[in-house]
Image 1 (cartoon, one colour):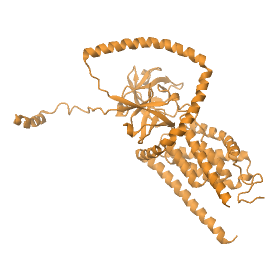
Image 2 (tube, rainbow over the protein chains, first blue to last red; image 1 turned 180 degrees about the vertical axis):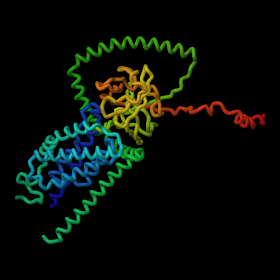
Image 3 (cartoon, chains in turn brown, red; image 1 turned 120 degrees about the horizontal axis):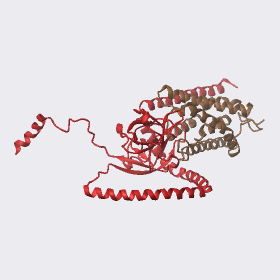
Image 4 (cartoon, each protein chain N blue to C red; image 1 turned 60 degrees about the vertical axis):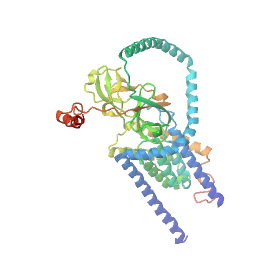
Length: 179
Length: 300
């Protein structure tokens, strides 16, 4: 019991550290020019991959804190990014239950569609509040870029952090039962 | 499975839903407040960023160092080309140096004739770029100078050549610079040599748009764009860039500032100039002048 709890704590700590690292990578002054290729949304990719596999170790408050951190640090509309991130990851959290039965292609499609919905939500919110909005093409390009990087993120987490779907390959399942 | 054990998860589930709804409302409320009263929210944001600055300082320097090595290596690969380019540039610069020296001497002579004393209208303080926005939707950067360096909101930031942006949000030790390429940026400008006034508005691309010209046909590609000082946010005569004409006929501006190599930024401390709004205070009406002179005259 104690080891399970401590393992869970370690996982939560590591997703926190990775989230902060994603924010720092985003904010590092690497591509300042507007023409430079912007990074895909690493924070969303990390949280999406993590929550689909280990929803219990990336709790709601952590997602909210990281989202607010991103909004504060990276500039842009305050609160909007965090709110859409929270809703998007909550939807994925509901899907985590059936993660073990889902082929990867379907998971990939789902993560991309959720991100599209998040971006669309941001776009609509900015439009409704009469804020100046980037062209649709910028949003589409960002979506494509982020979706393309998702398999890499999953692979990196799988081999770097041993993040797997519980119950997928003979391990303990969602309720901790060993088959 | 008794009803007791199921009641607890159900209760937590409801609580969790409430928490989620509350958080979302809170965040969307923040967004609304940001839209309505953004200076206050920006102040709050900068207060939070101020706390994080020491952390940013020592975590980001290795990252930028590594990126620097990569780009240095890339430039190392084409060192011969660069060498040739630099030689040509040096040749050209020698001409300019000669011209500059002559002008400087002439200027010194004229100034000596005139015994003029120039008031230092602009001084500046240089800061290092800490972070950039890292997102395609907004173009901004954090720099490591703030209120303690006697800079304030709205001041212009330049690299060594051209206008980069202005301060929007400032803390004790850090400030956020919104670039002229950001979608929220509008800069009143003057196009030389035709003297047309217009607005350079950013659109999150590398080339902001030149709009609201009185007579767009008078402006040609290659014209210099400088700030006009209208509206009082930017000081006048700062170089913004050069006019380009896009394939669809729109006028764009290629910024003179090199956004690819933005490491240090100069923030211009502008001294508030007395503004002359109307003739009222220059020549007083006679009745007032007499009434002011009255007590003085009585004293004599």
